[in-house]
Length: 78
Image 1 (cartoon, rainbow, N blue to C red):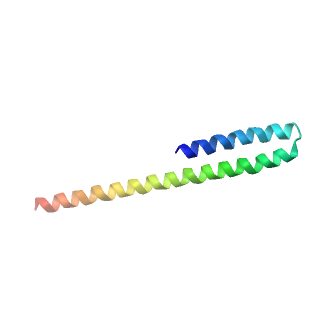
Image 2 (cartoon, rainbow, N blue to C red):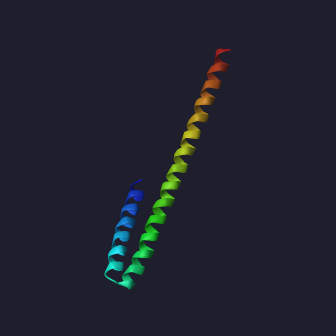
């Protein structure tokens, strides 16, 4: 999660630099900041999505293991 927040922060900083470069009409740096902010924000989004998918997968595995334990307990009672 640390990489997500780092990339998100850098993406936001690059967006602020992009706005400043556009205001001062520094077009080469504005183009640079477009690519940098897009790269950082897209990678942060992919990490966020991957983390969310991993978390839901962990929840599903936890549910399955608890269901298996319940089944084993019922079988042992018989």
